[in-house]
Image (cartoon, rainbow, N blue to C red; front, side, top):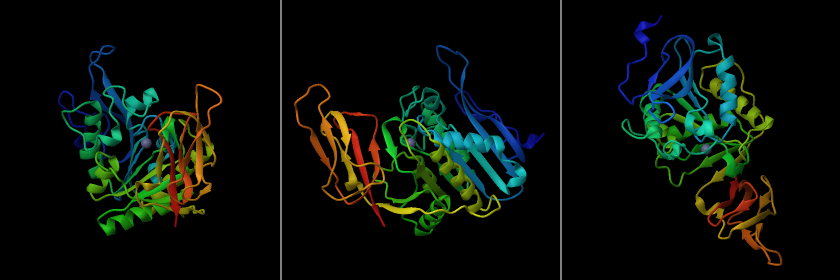
Length: 338
Ligand SMILES: [Zn+2]
């Protein structure tokens, strides 16, 4: 029994894994964070984790439900955790299908415990809130183990995306090239070269700051996964593990459209509340200043709609869901085809 790899004993309010992170074979368990509360005085937040290891090789860290209402990652990673066998890999795969378990359990973007957005809470704090502690553990204990990190996102309950994998424009061009190559290996229908405008607190930024190869996704949204979007996730995981040298086999490669998101000028936000009437759908070409949506009053008849226009030329890459918008809501993202 791998006693030398036994989980560390943690202090009060610290996360301890219930499984070894460096043992050979398959281990399913939890990251256990004591969390005393009204309905469970000595309860814990239990974040499911699977570690599959075989021999010496690279380590991949695969994460889903960073935001709790995004489902392609959890579905595809649950399947991977249940089916991947050690003899299929050389190296190690660390799988967190639901890294933000409190938010996932509620079907919400942010944690119901502390209200925090996990993807704005990195690198976290050892003595912080529940979300900050989970972030701190992942940043200090899991990311350092990894050579390559894949973090699944989609639009959640209020956005819908074209299915894309993304890598960031980075100051270290060798690291950027490694991330772009991993994104191309993932081979989503769309591949986005992305400049993050406000990267502070993101998991992406923490992983990249540690010098790792990082790929993220937006695979759909509207608070659900589809057969098509999960198939993209499933293929992307396999391709990424092959690309990383962890799994043997040939990449499954289909066509991908290269998109550029060079700055925030292609985001459109609503200055009006009402009933949104999209004039284009995801994937449709749009030209700068073209009307892309109308917003009708939601509370009266006989009033003309307000028109929203595209701010740049490209294809509609993300939109708002569901049917009503508030002042300040995101309406559209147009990415540039390269
Ligand atoms: Zn997300």
